[in-house]
Each structure stands twice: as structure tokens, then as C-alpha cells.
Image 1 (spheres, rainbow, N blue to C red):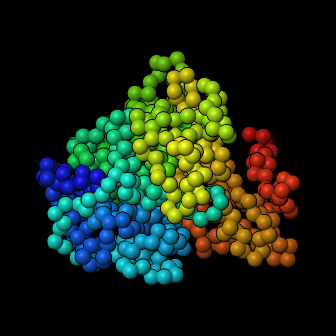
Image 2: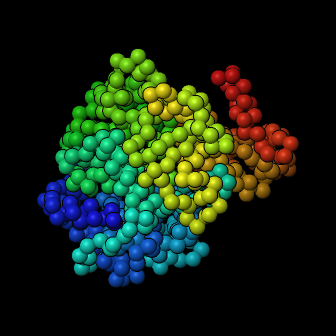
Image 3: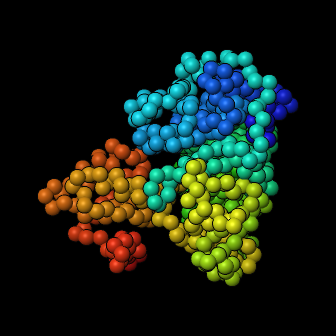
Length: 512
């Protein structure tokens, strides 16, 4: 079933329910939202030749039009390719080319930047605030969403790997339906009076979580700023009520700090779901103390979106259980639609309490990586997704993350992969070798530290390397600090020992 069916049904059953908001201002009810998506779907089909199975990319900042474009593409039977608006235009251009997207929705000035970065022009580049998008809205609407099977791709999400270019995670309509049902069963209820507030990027988890709110005919609110501003969130929550927010741990920390400073108690905020990176125990304890029992946690990956484990509201707020601290430091228990195991390198299930790799299988797990059989075979073995994350299960089924076998750095809830940064550094003529690691940061969770071996004759300084990185990768991926060294520690095979780099950093910090 096409997930756009949920919008079509809500438009029929609850036509007058408020749907899309820009801040406090209502833009559309459900009848209007459904009609707009159906019209965009028809326009994509009739004027741009989009057929079921085609890919439609969205490289845009958050806006109500983003949601219309997303459901419009689904109405046409296309798969969405959501692209983080913080990416460099060159990175976005690679994703568009690799996915074969025939239409790209964008927002200014991202569209202009993208045009200069594309090696081959896309057939259609449509500004979400422009006349062409408005013309799509005025098309004669499709009677119903184009038919799609559960196995058909709906969401092609590009996640980077430690070994090179980003990989496209193929998420089907059935995968997304399982995600929604798991959310309703394991994370939180959704009511028609609720409001999903999109302060985190719609290209990631926040966008996926629109589905359960469409299913329940709830409101969809995009802040006027289009992003995360604590004062704006508090004001919208007081005005609109029953707000739901998906937030990275760093966002939660900022919200709590602002609440404590301003004397806010979270009035109007019903639920904050946090995930996308490690939440320190002290931070979530403080969050509940300041804002009350409004928090739920999820752990997932792009390959099993938002759906590996969950820690519900009662568990986050519980202070009576004798092991409440250990449970709160965990990422919860397996969601209803999946099985979770801890295994050794050979795939043998490990005993309770032992640390190994986390593997998961079930209805939400991806079918594989887009046009990458080798990577798909490595990640999916005998039906199990090997996550690359290390963890341990306790006797009650609570999963605690220990470390990551992959070298991914999570800064502000966003994955940053070392090789992307290293390759950018290595294109500088004065850099002979480079290796980057994540180091602890109180605000962002982790920041990037680069170890660099320079050419003795040119010897670029940190500021020059910073500007060099900004020319090819997103700003948030650039190193925040540099260590210039004469050589990188390596094993007998010439592989850089990142464990040794971490040890060197720890020694710098006095062994902490």
C-alpha cells in the first residue's frame, strides 16, 4: 500500500481538521492538504513524466511546502530522496546523480548553488516557493495515489559509510508502515489534537515521523524560522498546545538550558522524542527535572529507521525501580516489529551482559543499498542487519550502547564519517596525510579533531585548511581543531591506528 493513502483517507474522513501551519498561522486543513498533494502528484506525472518507481529529490530547508512535495511525489508513485539542506551543493549533486532523480524540489538559495554543482542538469529543478511549484498545486488532482506494493521503495535515504561515497538506503512503503505501527505501540500515542513541530530537519527522522501524524489527522507545524529556536518552540507550544518534537540530544540540552534560564516548565509540550546520538545520563535526568515526564527515546539507523529499540515515557520518568539509572542510560528495549540480538564476529548470540555487535531483523529493516550489492551483502546476512554498533542486553532486555565498530562521528545528532573529511583534507596540496576522530564535547556530543601531516615546504595552517574544507564539504563536517604531527601511527599493514590517536588525545587531556 502507498503511504499516501493515509493522507487521502484523512482528507476524506477529517476534511476540516487543521493540517499545515507556518508558526501559529494555519495554511491548510486536511482536505486542502490532501488536494494539494494529489494535484502535485498529477502535475509531476503529466508535466514532468514522473512514473511509479521514479525518484524525486528534495534539497530544501523545512517548510510546509516540503510536506506537500513529499506527499505529492508519493501520490505519483515516486520514491522520495531527502537530502540534508546543510550538505554542500557538491555532495547533494552526487546524491541526485546516483539516485537518478528526475525532479528536484529545492529552496533558495540551495537551488542556485546546486545548479552550479551539477555535472549534468536534472530535467526539472523546482523552487518550493516559486511559480512552477504553485502551478503544480493548481493541477487537476489525482483521484487516488498511484498503486504501490509494500515492497516498492518509498524513501531513498543517503547515509555515508566509512569506506567512501554515501550509500542509498532503500526503505519501502511496508518498512515505513511498520515504523509507524511500532511508534504507536512502543513509543507514544498520537491524537488528532496533537501537533508535530518540525524543528529538526524533515530530511531525517522528523520527516519520517510526519506519517503517524498524518494517519491520525494531527497538525503539522513548521516554525517560522524553519529551525530550532528554544524561545520560538516555547511560544508555539503555549499557543498551539499538545506539541510533539523529535530532537537530537544536543537540541534537548539547549531546550533544557533555555527553560531553566527563563523559568519555562514546558507548557504545551506533550512529547519530546530524542534520538540520533548518545544522550548522557546526567542530561536526561536534568531534562526530566526541568520539563517533566515528556520524554521518550528511540534508537535506530537509516537502515532500520527509528525502529530498533525504544524507551517509553514511563521508563524515562521512572525513579522507583532499583536500577532506574542503568535503564535510563540504555536505549530501551526492542520495538514490537523487530528482533534484536548481540552477536560475536561469527554471528553467535552472546550471553546476557556481554558486549558484541547489535543485529536486528524485522519488518522495518531496509531491503538493501541502492545499486550496491556488495554493501548490501555485508550489511544484511541471513535476514539480519549488522548495525556496526556495539552493545549489551541486560536480563530485562534493555540495550546499552557501548561503542561503534564503525568510526562514525555523531555531532549534534548528525552522522559525520571520517573518510569524507579526510578526503577533503587530502585534496589540499600541502597535506600529505590526514586522519580524523571524534572527541567528546559538552554541547555537541562530539566534535571533529584532525591529525594532519603536512608537506614541509608548504605547511598550511589550520585556518587555510578550514577554508579548503568549506569548498567541498558541509560546514558542520569540517574539523573544529587540528593537531599537526610528523607522522600518523600505523600498523604493519600501513593502516592508521585511530585507537592510538584517541589515546594521544586522551593523554593531552590528562588521561580523561
